[in-house]
Length: 373
Image 1 (cartoon, rainbow, N blue to C red):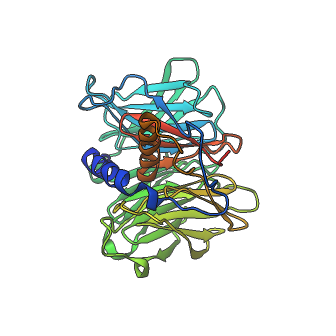
Image 2 (spheres, rainbow, N blue to C red; image 1 turned 60 degrees about the horizontal axis):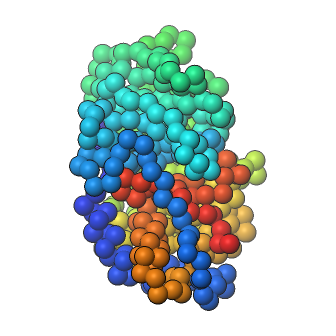
Image 3 (cartoon, rainbow, N blue to C red; image 1 turned 120 degrees about the vertical axis):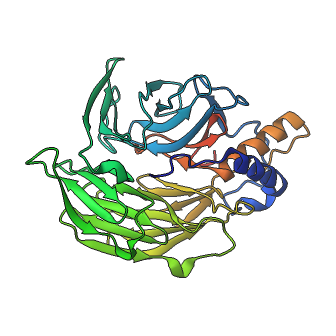
């Protein structure tokens, strides 16, 4: 079963201490960085309803995105089941919540780029069921079905974004797809290479294609079972902790339908879904997990403070210089914000008009602008 506890708070605290020590050396500086910063604010912390900093069991994780906002998993020490939250674009505290009746081993926003403002929709998989939750009137609408027999070995499940909306089920290295002409039946379409199974998968925003990560390999799998392998083992750094691909994101501009993914501190690009290249190396400083990145229509943003144009490849810095003040409250707040951003994870909405990047910081969400003022 896929590991759903992707964040380890103790590691985050250690990283925060390391970044407080090294913050001045971790952020990139270029000609767009002002020599002095007299402002008293950069980012803004947003309280997450129902959870409290320092309370055991209260935590946010698993940032995911749609064109209407940022989704996340929220755990509360006061309740048994996790929740799924969505923060509306812009970071104005406008939240939608759903409490899980059972533990979701997989969940994804249903409408990656076509969600409406009053819609909240996720696909989920539990130990014995899969289905959809939709909230657009304040009350959740649930549509679910039991897994077929033999799904006890299921380790990943998702729905693609094609007109067929196929359900994909991964069992180790075996890939099955639901037969939409005979609902409830699943057909084996392929077996992934090397027999190691997959870590996680993401549905392509456009087609009946799924991108599945397995260690240092990324698989492009079509609905008819064709597999293309992209291997990044030549880029492995043995000094970093992780040795598996950890994130896959997509640019969806009509001219650039590209795939981006992170392995350790390197962001790779697969141009038009076919040609692999190294796109960016994150200057991760003391972050031995490798750092993080996110993608909108036009830019990549990374936790070292770099904003890189997807088309022009130009790079600018989005983290301001440390404020020139003797006020220790202002200085500590700045260090806390920049450290939280450096550690990540970070995410952006798929709405090109939303001008913020979001990061999880313990039990709060940090909102920072995409460009320096």
